[in-house]
Length: 398
Ligand code: HEM
Image 1 (tube, rainbow, N blue to C red):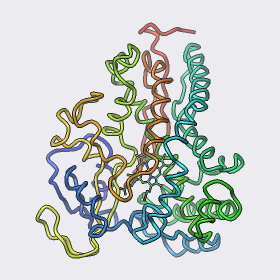
Image 2 (cartoon, helix red, strand yellow):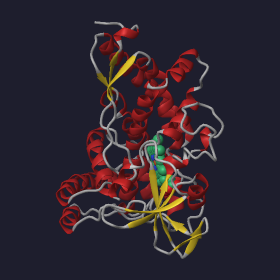
Image 3 (tube, rainbow, N blue to C red):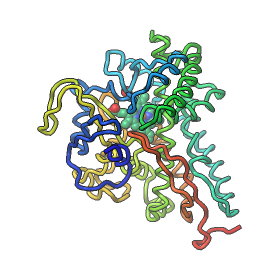
Image 4 (cartoon, rainbow, N blue to C red):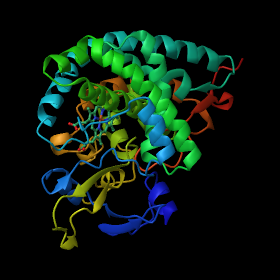
């Protein structure tokens, strides 16, 4: 059953899946999996019955040896954002939302466009010369982090370490792991936590605003920890997955070129069909029912966001990439309700810039190496996406 819990989330899914299913994970723990759009939405909209406290729980419980490593770095993760169902959540969320205000997002667009355009020019030259290029490593991987660092005033010296740490965190908390790997990952995550603590205690921007609002340093660290994972890994994953998907959608690429397909619609359809976060968790706070099924208090619930985006009750042609089709925007890639993603606007802007600038690279592309995604309950974490120019289709051979 482990394979079911950890690999089914990604791609096309065997039908029929029931609306609700109890699925046992790699350790034999049963989870209630919710597959239908309406039911996923119902759970997300009711944070009293379905609480978010388990959102960041390690899928593979962290063993004592790894906990010792974390404790050695004074690692603590108090509830702040995604896993905070308490009274402090609205204030912390409001401060983070202010830092990511649409006006501040829009202000980053010209700078980001310049950066992406320069990179795309270099990549186009390499493709023209007959070389393969990796659109993950050479384009998408660090872009969202560079934008976020500007928005939360993270010093440039710390951005380099964030990438290593954030992938380790996604693995430590959301992957099926063995003991030794957990200890290794704990060392990386713990080391970063130490760096973050200095930034949280002395940094300007968002860190300073959280401190000024009276939040203890532990809480500032917790908020930054989540933000630096959620606020950039997700988007770089999404950019990679979307660009890969577009290589197989020549009509969409032609529409973008001709100006007949709006880029915003392409991004939305991408979020619906290629969400970087495929599942998200809640826990039943009380004995309750869902779609008539009794759910005892304490039941861990896995909301299958990716599946909800393909629900035929919501989208007429669920498997097809048709920008602007009815229902396209009703995906749940960003969650819903009190914890809905506060970075939605930012990631949409980033994706629109990258698709606009990079789409021409895809037109005559051959996929040399599609993205490979490791087993992970929630995050897709593509590792590479290599293309080269198809010389037979009018590319410019070296
Ligand atoms: C394509 C990119 C992204 C996707 C698919 C995504 C998805 C999600 C999802 C599914 C949640 C949980 C929602 C819920 O529980 O209802 C979430 C929460 C959150 N996201 Fe994102 N996210 C993305 C990008 C970002 C960015 C760019 C930022 C910030 C820079 C960000 C910051 C957050 C924060 C702070 C929360 C917690 C909100 C709260 O608990 O109040 N995310 N995101």
